[in-house]
Image (cartoon, rainbow, N blue to C red):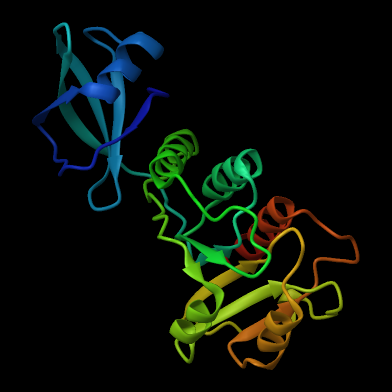
Amino acid sequence: MSKIRLFWEKSLEEKSQVKVSDKDFHYLSNVMRCDIGSTILLFNKANGEFLSKVIKKTKNEFILSVINRIKHEQIKNVFNMAFCPPKSKKLDFLIQKCTEIGVNNFYPIISDHTENRNLNLGRIKKIIKEAVEQSNQTHIPEIYNPIIFSNFVKKSDGYSQIFFGDIQSDKKLANLKIDMVKEKFIFIGPEGDFSLKEIEIIRSNQNFFSFSLGKRIFRSETAAIASLVLFNNFFN
């Protein structure tokens, strides 16, 4: 079975042909060294994953024959990641690893102490796409425009469950009541923690639920990865 996976935005179906050009052509030709006869796995969320084969190559284009759908179990990503973006390298690491682990969508939050307020969404989308291709998934998480903390709280009121790691909490995941109908978020704060005003809002809001990650203080990217692993393993 081919280990080369490529996200394909357009519709996929058996016994059809697709043309690959631009950045995807560069990736297949120059990075993966594909040629006529090479097999490639094409996938998207709507259609699933398909085995395809290169049947023609020009200077700037591949033509692939879509052979058949590959059946494999997909784990549904239930939890969104709402997070206060750290600085560049830490942000890249957080996005890449949370995508690999399995996240529904990313929601950047601008809190009082958020360090990184000017996100390159194009770059982040590229990191997400490559992480999905690498980790044998078909769902591409969305990265939304940053939203101010107070607006996030207002928009989520009554419609969401927001889980946040709290060093003062002794609540274990097994004791949390998950409403599978509501939208669910894991909420990660900034490196300098939330402001006193924000902490007061979080602790008094009925949509926020604290849980314990232990008594160690984590960096934001570590907290995001640890939380997502715990929730995914426990609830899947």
